[in-house]
Length: 331
Ligand code: ATP
Ligand code: LTN
Image (cartoon, rainbow, N blue to C red; front, side):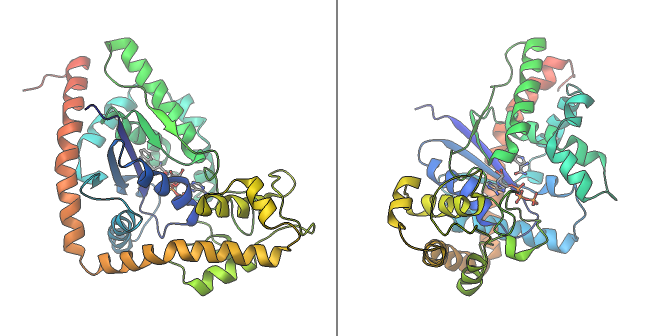
């Protein structure tokens, strides 16, 4: 039984949003039966912006809890912390030598983050996608489930892998991104033309997975829509309503046509309430499990330690092959 390999990760930059959940985590949970899955906390990537060390530590632990509370079974998946497996940074250095400045200069996330953190445009931010390529290639991942915003990094990963393979012979698998049509880009509630982001400054723009039912109701009630007062899917001219429909559709497993029919003749008030209640219903068990898991941090660490051991075995095999191919002398 040769299962395909999956690898993905999320940065420990703060509470996750509904966008992270619907665009990434929820798909991971669906994939755990069929694939050999490696899910990591991308703590090293988090260092590309300034963090309070204590907060980073807390966020890392919280993120592990959230992975499991979202439905990832630690017995079926390899859950680990990126910095616990040195092969990622070791491979990253080598891949840096096969990545061009011009390629990194084109990355939209780099442009976006450098404008947001103009006082700290460090070289880690610039080479961020190379570490991400190393994360993926060290496991010979077949598929990488991510939101739309990470697709460009995946394309770069493929280019680096192909370049290396053509120089040294078949070494890396060429990974494919895995995104779903609906949910790959959940938009902000206040600004539905930009993606919902953890680091958004406006709390009303994002639903956090840890928000209380009242906060969720309030945020959906205030969500930006339009003046047509008709629940109809049209991303171009009705981005706000279309975004709410996508959220509702994924949670309730309904098509956009079905949602249009369900809310025919009803105004936005009733629709917004239905979306909020659907989200609350989905998040409630997740939040209960999350709070329960956080009461026992040792257990969470034990899961990650076990995960790191398994991850390390796999990644070290690939790293050794790469060392040999480029001519490093290995004992
Ligand atoms: P930050 O604001 O710190 O950059 P982020 O919210 O963009 O964070 P990431 O840690 O960069 O989150 O992303 C984690 C995963 O969630 C990635 O797979 C990313 O593609 C996905 N993701 C992030 N935002 C959204 C969104 N709005 N819709 C769908 N998927 C998303
Ligand atoms: N850059 C990703 C996080 C990330 C990742 C990865 C995702 C780091 N390494 C490897 C998939 C595979 C982000 O979501 N911002």
